[in-house]
Each structure stands twice: as structure tokens, then as C-alpha cells.
Length: 259
Image 1 (tube, rainbow, N blue to C red):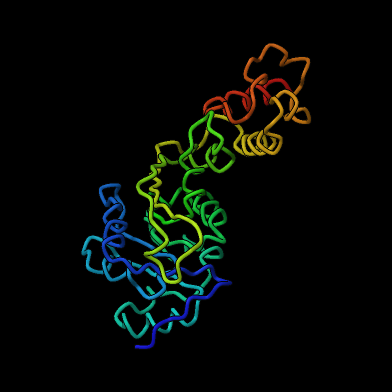
Image 2 (image 1 turned 90 degrees about the vertical axis):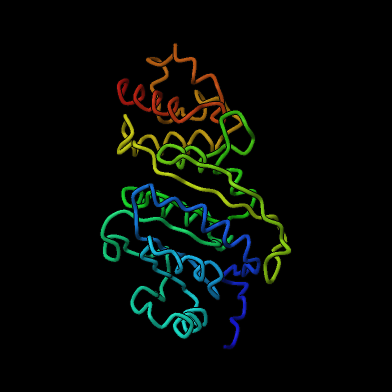
């Protein structure tokens, strides 16, 4: 079978180490009450080989690369319509999956943030994600308040998911090797259906705070807050990177109450 060429414009770096592939797949936890798993960007199927041996999952594969898709069609003829040639970012989850699902993948590093925001948009269905990202992105996802890595992505993900940094992966186990270190993280959906505030305003507050992260929130949020009514709020004297998800919820509720 002809091998698939890694394409730079798709950010493809194919994992070649089966031990790491096994470790990634074993990081999924079906006890989180899902049986459907979607693998994003399977390439030549190093994760898929292991996934498809697991009887507890109904496995679906999605790849935008036509060459990969044709390769996988020959490799896994029994998959049928569960092998999808499409853009994950454009996928309608509700049309394909009935109920909760897990997502797994060695994700293209050039669209890491878009993948994570796609997960957030579908958080009512996506109960778990295990994925390989650029180490820097993985650290941002799992960062805690007060660290320089903590930012917009950290807050949005941690509002709805428990984020765990699982392990670091060296460049030598990929073909071609990336110029950066990689890392695997796990997102597990928490019990929060909706934040205890205006969620749209919460997103605005978090973005405004971090877009001017050197300023205190009192200044960074000047277009959103009623300064006269919120003079006594001590959280506004901090920078965004110091606030937890709960702190951002508190400020959002106060902005709503004082408008």
C-alpha cells in the first residue's frame, strides 16, 4: 500500500511510535459514559489501528486530506460511512452522532485553537477529548491563574472541562519531525451546563481582559463596566491572568447587575 505524503499546508506530522499511540488511546476513559469516538486527522491510521481493536467504541474517522481518506478506505474497508472525508471544523456533530462522544487525535498544530473552540461549541455532546498538541498550546490549556501561560483559551476550556496535561512527546517520533515539542492533554467535561452568568458577556469580559493583559481589569474593561457603581470591586484592581473562572463569573454578574 502506497504511503501517504505529509502535507505542510495541512500541518501533517505523522506519529510513528506505536507505544506512544497506545498510550494516547489508553488515555480515553469510556467510563465517562460515551461509546462513540471520533478520530480527527488519522493520517495513515497509527491511532486508528489501536482504536479499532477496542470493542467498547464505535469509531469514526474524519480526514480532510483526500490521499489519507483513500489510503484509509483501502486499509479499513469495513468502516463504510464511519470514514469521513471532510473538514472537522465544518462538521455538524448532531447530524453524525446520536448522543455523547469522545474525540481523539494527533491534531494539526496550525489549527489547534480552532479545534478547541469547535469542541467548546459542541460541549453539550463532547464529553472527553484526548489530543496531541504543540507543547506550548497544551501548557496554555492546562495553565492555572497567575502563570504567564494562562489566557483566554485556559479560561474558556476550564469553564466547562477539567484539563489535564498528560505527557510530553519529543519531535523524533514523527515523520516529518516538527520543530517543536508536543504534548498530550485530556479534557473531561464537568457538570456545568451553563455558567451562572450571561455567558455571552462572560466571553466578552474574558477576551477584553486578556487582550490588554498588562492593564488592570478596571482599565481593560472600561467599555463594559459602570465605573461609578463598581468602585469597591477589588477584583477589578487585578490583571486578567490572576482571576479564576469563578472570579470572571462574579465580575460578569456584577456588570450585568450594575448596567
